[in-house]
Structure formats: C-alpha cells, structure tokens
Image (cartoon, rainbow, N blue to C red; front, side, top):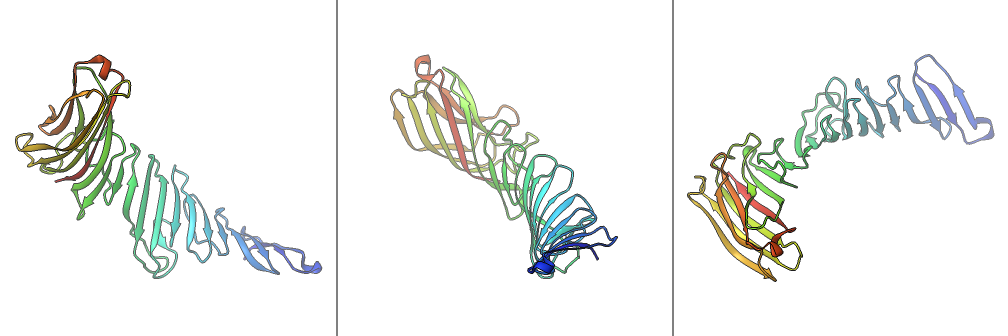
Length: 289
C-alpha cells in the first residue's frame, strides 16, 4: 500500500490524493498509472517499485533493471540487473548484471560484470577494469604490477588471469639535465621488486626536446631482456630523427641500482644551451613476464 498523488485526464480526476500509514509515497499519472514510488528508506523507483536496498539510497528505473546508488560511504554506482541488500542480488532472472563504481571510498573507479542468475539470489561480480587513485588503468587485474610511482598514465592487461605477468603500455616524462644521466623507466612491482622473472619484450619510444624546442631527438627502440638483470638485455635502435642539435648522448638499459631490475636511462649532451629547460617523454609497449 501507499499514499498516492494521482493526476487524471478529466476535470473530475485532475488531481486525486489517497493516504495510508505505510510510509510509502507514489506519484501516479494517466488516471492511476504509478509513475514514481518512494519507499520508507527513500529509495526511488521510476516505473517500478524499487527492491529493498538496505544501505544508502538508490534511484531504480523500470522493470527492476537499472539503478543509480550511493552507499553513503564515498561510493556511487551505476548498476544494471542488480541491487544491494546485505550483498549484491539479481534484480531479474537470467539477465546479466553490470556495475560501474565511482569512488569506492578510495578514489578508485571500477567496472564489473556477472553472468545471469536467479532474481533475489546473490551476485558474484568479476572486476573487468579499474582506474586506481594514481591514474593507472588496469584491465583484468586489481593491482598495478609495475612500479609507476611518478610515472604517468600506465596501463596493464593481465595475461590468462595470471596477475604476475602482463601486457603494459605506459609513458613517463622527465626533465632534461645537462651532461647527466637520468632514469626514464623502471620495471618493478609496487613492492619494488622485479615483475615475474624480470623478462621484458617490447618497444620503447623516446622523444627529447631541448629547452628552446629547436633541438630535438625522437627514436624507437626494441627492448628484449632474458630476465637476468642487464646481462642478457638488448636495446636495439629501430629508427631515429634529429632536429637541430641532438640533445641526447645515449639511450641505454642499465641495472636500476635498487633490485637488479631493468631501467632505461637517457644521457644528455654537455651543452646547456641545447639541453637546459628541455624534457623527455618515454613510452613502453610490450609484455613483462
């Protein structure tokens, strides 16, 4: 039952109100067709009576299928095919469930899915992708298995569900420092240890701009490592181009100086007029295993 405010289509039924003590409010149109239901927990259903959400508040839309939910603890979800009542439950039978979570209380955004099940039974979601609070994009894994602290816009695709290995694509920007060698990339996990066996296979892209912008170097390298530090690591130049005076003395692979892992370093020429005020952007696409 509910207290109802109804809009009719004739002068005699233009606005009608009936009341009860259920604490539920309904708005009706077209001579009594329920349009909106507000339950006693302030959950709202449009075109449908909302299922019971025992935490936070939800706006549920049509046929118990789609909802916007805020759990009251820093998370807002866009949900299809599910609702939350002491755990996630199916809102329909044989309909897959999908969930897009904003915030998660820690600044992480996630996308999750589940195959169809039985209405009101428990849903087991599988996370498909996330953007963590550092801006890392992670596909089919929940942890950033490369140490990209201060390294920007990283992405990972785990292989065969094995979260120790993966396909990566990421970039990093470092300042150009006259007559110095800087570490542009390091291949480590969040604990600061080597990923998997430390083996790497991929392509490194390098762009270096001198301070004036008139001097620049860009190049593509193949990087292959057998996983034994730098002993069996090869960085091979594929192609390169120089504009003006080359600000780069060399691009090399080296021991990262911390764990014996692989690092890519850039050495700048000894010419402050060419180098100072410049920067390097370095990218990697490949697999770590």
